[in-house]
Length: 198
Ligand code: GTP
Ligand code: MG
Image (tube, rainbow, N blue to C red):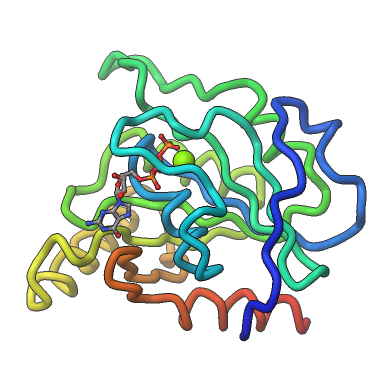
């Protein structure tokens, strides 16, 4: 799919104030600093569209970007920045859970995980939470440029195993990406395009 236009529409912390057009949308979620905003910029080929930072906690609101005038990419704040005790269940920000629980236009979520790390408890919890809500989801591995090519499939296989061990009977679609090396753009956009055609 070719992206002809990508425009910022609105930021807010209230799902009721998100754009009320009945257009399909795709949300990007994951730990702070995993590369959500950078990925949106890579997909749209516009380095200045979503704000990025080397410090975690840059994106603080729900951000709607309209693509080709007929669907949305949604950049969300990260989770897991504030310390969560290892024992207690993670508590996700209320407006983020509201977004996933109430947003009717949401078609699918992409949960981003850093390809360098083993499966993290907080990500598995969020994936389970989305699964229980019935939100279609995919996993996007980010920062693939940070490990050797030979290691990529090894890390992906380990992640698959962790999901299967977490009561997932089958694993969701996986995408390997690097925003700095522009890896994975066609795969993610083709996937979105296929859903949009249905
Ligand atoms: P929050 O908004 O704070 O939740 O973070 P985010 O998930 O939106 O991360 P962001 O896109 O701001 O990127 C965080 C840092 O990771 C920045 O310094 C990016 O340049 C860097 N980064 C993001 N993607 C990649 C990637 O694919 N490769 C490399 N090497 N660095 C990346
Ligand atoms: Mg961000």
